[in-house]
Length: 453
Image 1 (cartoon, rainbow, N blue to C red):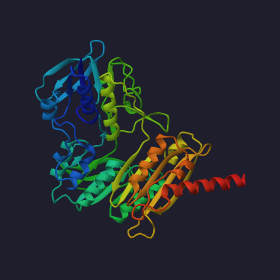
Image 2 (image 1 turned 180 degrees about the vertical axis):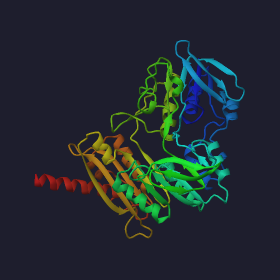
Image 3 (image 1 turned 90 degrees about the horizontal axis):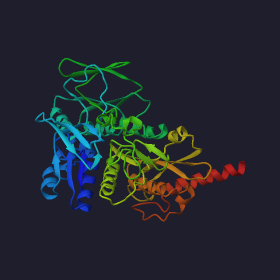
Image 4 (image 1 turned 45 degrees about the vertical axis):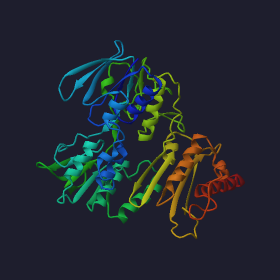
């Protein structure tokens, strides 16, 4: 059986490892358009700040390991251009030699990932203008960050934008973040995002919201950013305006796509075209709370989908259960966590909902070092089923987001959160965990509402 995998990172290589494990006679060919296999993209901002010493530290397995130890025909600089499902052929070009290649397959996995969205602004090609998605991107930024670079502008207030604003500030740079929306951290509701804005101000990161970038200006190198309201001087620009799935080469195959051109699969990671599978950032993900496909590209999901795709390709049936939309990031002294639906997402989906929001302490109030933690839960108003949670604080955010993600996976109600047997000792928690306190407050509110009704 000949397996061809397009993409040599998280999803692609997770699949490859399952195939060689369960199919002893497998011939596995992986096609990577870059030079580096299997690395942690989420660690890139921390190599730029110097917290992680080198981008080499992010490489999980080197290409020689896949070739020599596991017998995978792992190719680099092989860019796929077309797929012919009728002849079961992949066609592309070796971008180093310029030679075209034709590869036949019995089963094909598309794990081509995603690329940064690059707006068509004037001056986008000036020196000192960067995006961040790959190790070469990070190395280029590191090379560009000389002592003369003092004023840095980040465009975009999503996860990467916030993480890179922190990285540049950690290096002592003057940082400005421009975002076209009304607030940064769009995964949160506005009342939760205010804590992000306050943290930026605390660390002298200038936030510019409600402004649209229209041009990048300079002669050879970037000198300023022009928005629809003002011109800002800058020495370096990091563009973080989102990503798009790498799926242009599937045109004409008949493969079904959804939002942003991401590939639609079933729970076995099969596309609608026979013997073609897809996984990772180029695909949609089934959202368990929304009960529909969504596009939430994350490294955890890519590894999971890739593993499941590989198992199914090797005739080891396994279903992808879906996601709850869990994410977490560090921004200066804060941890920002979310899972499930925010209030505005519930509203957009026309789900009957209520919210509860509290401020508590991450550990026992009397224990030294306790810090505030802000929690907002969203739940259905008709049956009290938990819909999601947003948590922001200095400590203790991660474990509580994971508790809520587990609760969402098991379709628990707000009342059932109170019944959870969570660990307690003063250095780690209060006798009632903050998420349970939020649940109790929600139930009190519902009781009062019933009385009035």
